[in-house]
Image (cartoon, rainbow, N blue to C red; front, side, top):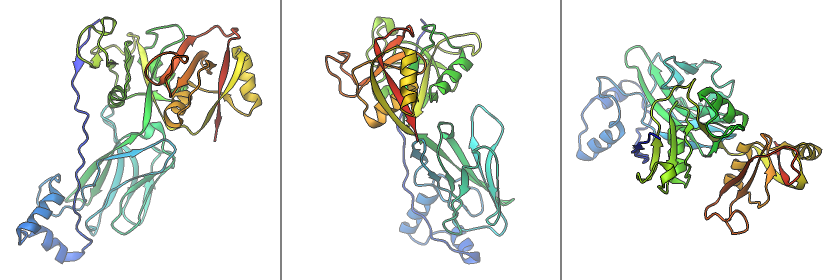
Length: 364
């Protein structure tokens, strides 16, 4: 097995900036272009502008206090973009930046009075407009697909400026195998499998965060960027030998021909998961959930309920994909015997086996 250790700096640096109040007209223009008259004023000016592109002319956009905005699925989130003052004629363009897609993914364009929405966020995006210098973007009912980088660009024909923000969702990464066993997915099959289980392929940064949170997994899986990796906390021979702990890489792989497992990501649960005691076979579990106005839970539902609501149950239960799993928030000897919390798996079982209960999901 070809492995290598990826060194990653996971730190996120947050700059706290000082903002100038709104000022209009020639007085503001002269103030911004003139040299500060004191050491204190000079320090404030440099603090506000230290990440700006130092080209001639006024800087219209304030640096954000935070470049990374945290949210969860189903929430409403605001991506801040504030002007120091408004040019006489301008437009603000919001777009989503995808490093793998050179096309501009427009979300909304406004000139301060009128705006045009595009289909990227399916009508869930609007301008906040809490004051006349506010060009912030509001995204309602955040989805897994909304995570990523966003650009606010002010265009006035002479001094075009932009800032970039990252939207991160709080969530959980889970490894997922095909029913046929280990290493059964090409890249597109892995993407589809995660979506079918209420998730999406995890990004490298999400896998890194999961590793720091305790994810230790020997089997390699596809990530959203197209790479194949696996996280190791306790080095051992079946997991790459005695290399240091870290995120191991399989290097470049063919997305159509090469097959691996998948690392999926899901966020906060919109609904609830509950357990029905068995014994039941798969068909009986389906019917039992339906009788209670619910359906058999997906794997992503179970992981989200475990991570966000502390779901803890010792008995194995059917899930809609035909696997049998149980979530442990409080590890103990009679519930799997492993030292760490997690979702335990019995794998895919014969659907006629009458040995298990069922985990149901009731949406909102």
